Image 1 (cartoon, helix red, strand yellow):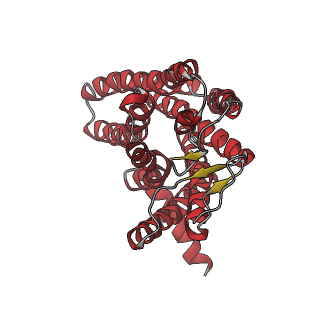
Image 2 (cartoon, rainbow, N blue to C red):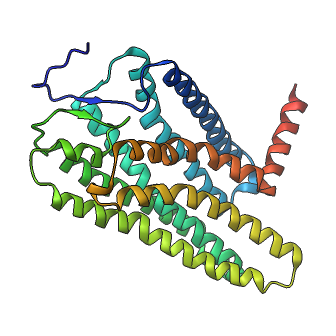
Length: 311
């Protein structure tokens, strides 16, 4: 039986899997996904940095996406694996705050970054002659810094509020990381004001960017349809479909989770959906962007040529 002091300020993470044979097999699968995602995103960052042909705003934004995905994985998976293998489900008060801060920062920043990537594709396809003006290096840096700063500020506000809520019930969080909405049922105060803040925040950082992305790609697809060049139309469509696939995998479970009223949510469903945007999406992003992108495949071929030449 687990020993737990209810007067402690620490929390308990109930985790994702039960401690049985099935749970151990699923944990091994998560560890494999974590390894593949870490290698894939690290390779993408390294490839973009090394190959001069990928030194464009589109790939610079993509390298930031890979960096955010790496931090996403590092925020949630190692603690979940450690707790399962050690049998200890506790997380310190400070550790919970740090985990919550970095998770929310990545969530908001990545949402804004995906919108920036959509804008990049919109300008490249719909206004190619003005691309160098609208998507200069300076503008690209502003987009990236804005994503990180706004995401961090929003995350800080939510984390500080969550850690100052009085918790008078059990401190057992029915999740595999410190997700603020999962912590609210443990509070001994009415949290409707904060739940409204979550709704507003989700709308600003996820729903509005998603609608902006949808509108941008509506214009892009219309422009692609009117292209006379068959090769240009195929290249543009491939690039856009790749990005739309990533956007769908990321936004759909996130928006569905955070915009639902509390009475329609269930911990089991929230944990399953969280696996999509915290574990599966970071693994799929480098695969999707590499296998469906000729420039990245070409850079990989050149890199393998360098490696074979130097052996």
